[in-house]
Amino acid sequence: MSAATPDGRPERPHRDDYVVWRRATTRWADDDVYGHLNNARYYELFDTAVNAHLIETTGVDIRALPEIGVVAETSCRYFREIGFPAPIDMGLAVERLGNSSVIYRIGLFQGDDDRAAAEGRFVHVYVDNSHGPGNRPVRPIPDVIRTAVAPLVR
Image 1 (tube, rainbow, N blue to C red):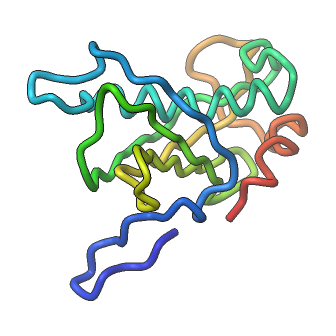
Image 2 (cartoon, rainbow, N blue to C red):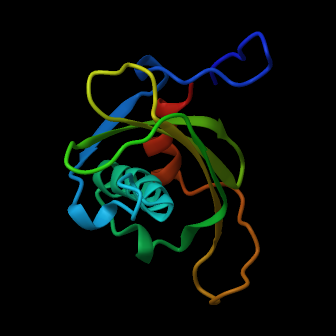
């Protein structure tokens, strides 16, 4: 994670803080009435970055695994406005790989700026997929998932 500024605020993450990349196309409808990306869209991008990586890297339907990752926490730090029409580059890294959870960091970049416009924190907790909602965390994280995310640890 990036260091803090002299006044204690976190520094904007840089492109080299992330391991893998994905590009998203923005749409006119992504912008809000103020002309910048709607807050809800940031969280959709975080979800897409994480799950697309898992699907592509594992080669399996992650929804059909015996253990699935459910979102336990998300947050976003906004640094500057972004929006339509330029594409958004999404950088992905793993902050922590635990026994039953993964903490991802997702940086959103637009244009030539090497500093993130926003950074998300996204926590997956793995639960038993066979008993429906309200399942308890499982240990350990499925091997197929651990293999896909271990190279992303920073």
